[in-house]
Image (cartoon, rainbow, N blue to C red; front, side):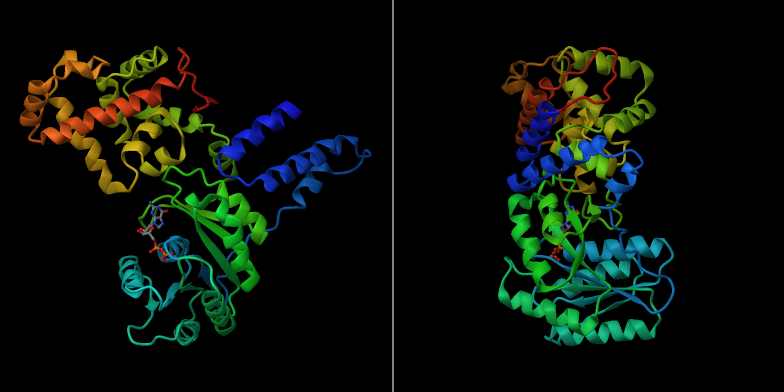
Length: 409
Ligand code: GDP
């Protein structure tokens, strides 16, 4: 068990989980495993589950539930407010948004635009500078309109500071939220503890949402935020769009933290979208460490058929390439398509070679002309290929294609 714990410890530390937390986890696991020593008759499952608290769910019955969002500027608060509203609206709640962020310029427009797109009522002001007044008026109005769930977006700052604490405290006093959600960017790492703690000391944070899980960060800081606020993670943000929002699921999150890909679901999906003969070829090529431009082309083609969320959260061969290439959002699919157009102008020999030296100056110019792209873009594609091929080399794929429980280095 110690070996196993040491391995987990290493992986967690590499994923930005703080050392004291990892130590605490070790102690807790040892305690739980020692449950075996407990006297017979104890319900072990119950003992473990005692730690889990039910997560807040807004009521459909009146009075309205008020949920307030807090977090630093840029964490993704405003985006997440709309996602949260949209998620509940789809579940049949009558939701509404209140923009009590008067600090960041343009935030009301951002919220208004998103809310309008999702047909969610909103409240805010271009002229009123007192966030407390706006929050109170907005909540009051939507309570009168008998909304089920009123979401209040508050201001952030670049770092936690006294003026922000004072402001959110006053907004909380004016709106009496049923739940305060702390929103954090998955890439903040070790800073998460202090940040989350500062908010918790000001208002009664009851849940955490981690944003930008579609990026490269593993989200280890979330554990620090959970420890600091003593609250669960309830959702994750997986993109800039309204529906790129998922209920938090422990298993894939932990797999990602430990550096393990959640292969199983993706392999099923791959089998659905990759033609049978190509499946065999793909596995064969990858198991021999043979990642050519053609393999990359096939990967692009397949992955364009898989929903991006799934690709990004799972950590598969396809995910590695696509997450690397398309880190920002749906619009970036065009980048893969652009690369594919350029690859269409390559010869078979070039596509099947894993050495970019076959591309001399005149071939690069020819490919650019043939695909209607710039020489610079062809060179960028070759650089990307080299980078991805290097990553791919580190992934060992067994010949039988059974990729469950494979570890991404
Ligand atoms: P706020 O200052 O905390 O209100 O942050 P915003 O909601 O304005 O978000 C800051 C930036 O992060 C914007 O460009 C958002 O589109 C982006 N963003 C928010 N959530 C996500 C997410 O889950 N994934 C990605 N890729 N971007 C996100």
